[in-house]
Image 1 (cartoon, rainbow, N blue to C red):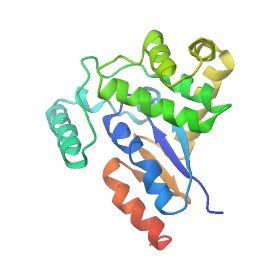
Image 2: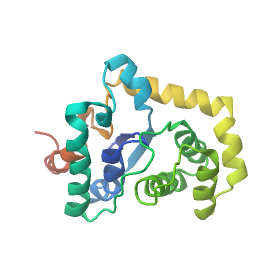
Image 3: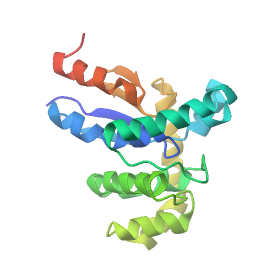
Image 4: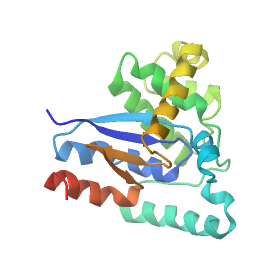
Length: 200
């Protein structure tokens, strides 16, 4: 069986959101599965010297236009959140906690959290919002709240971020296919072609 596609994403990343809406269908076309890895770009940016795009004066107006343009082109709903960026530890920990027992439910929770943030303008950095989204997904909100506060889950997220950096991940989305890295939602056609050809 072919190796899973590694999908690295940050909950404050609009490009990560668009990618999350498309990655499973892309993988399925080629008989692949996807391993979802939440990361914290704030931590990664400290080692790379990068900054959120909306905090870079020459880029901030462009990326906002780009996100709206991608939404129109793809039909993926998008609304710029009123609070951006956010601290994304809580949603990342919630997804890791759920994935321990049910990876499919964890992926659905990740998508629901992304949509809550980038469609419904809900601050998913807040515990109560994560609880609300989890409940709507039929998950145990109390268990997830405990999971987000669990030192073992916190350590797991730190490990995920460190492992991502060790593999050269520096942005969101970041996809690694058979050891080949691809950065950005705009590389998904290239990922598709790579999978179709078996490399190039």
